Length: 237
Ligand code: SF4
Ligand code: SF4
Image (tube, rainbow, N blue to C red; front, side, top):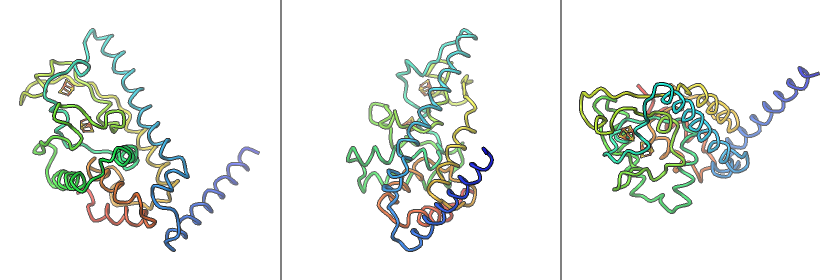
């Protein structure tokens, strides 16, 4: 019985996907923003990343306690060199950030240009040579999308003095929690629900690139082909 039910569910999902693909081809389907709201993905993507970060934090703090070390990031007042690194995120992780930028009236041409510039540099420079403050870091060194930050930003912690993060060649002791699998699974569900076709490489791209794409696609009915064509044009090398 269970097997039978699951086959029916798969068939229904396939039909639903075909119906949405047809609507997108005809240009009469929902916009990206409407599709995210209708499928509940706006809330789901936000919950998924927050939960991954909470789980990682718990594991890392337990590990630090056992090793009698202290997570320096909690009380860090140093310049945030960790927010000048080349940062990648899944497309679904950019959704809550784009939604927030829109709600807070921050989706301006200037912001889009800043995202475009950082994305281009992240596409062309190696991680070692990239060093530029994140578009979302404010003048007081605070993350302006903190509660919606991508998992990579929320699952890496340092247990050495913050000053060492800003010292070239210093031995920085990092704690990272291996939750790549959970983020990839969340992305796969996201792609299925929105009937997004595969792209070269994957939907894991520089953070400014995926946020910019979400903003650009938000009011488009052809969002699936728009996102895939843009990501194919900037395929990660
Ligand atoms: S990684 Fe280093 S610079 Fe960044 S918050 Fe943690 S201690 Fe501060
Ligand atoms: S999103 Fe926030 S935490 Fe992540 S790099 Fe940018 S400013 Fe730093």
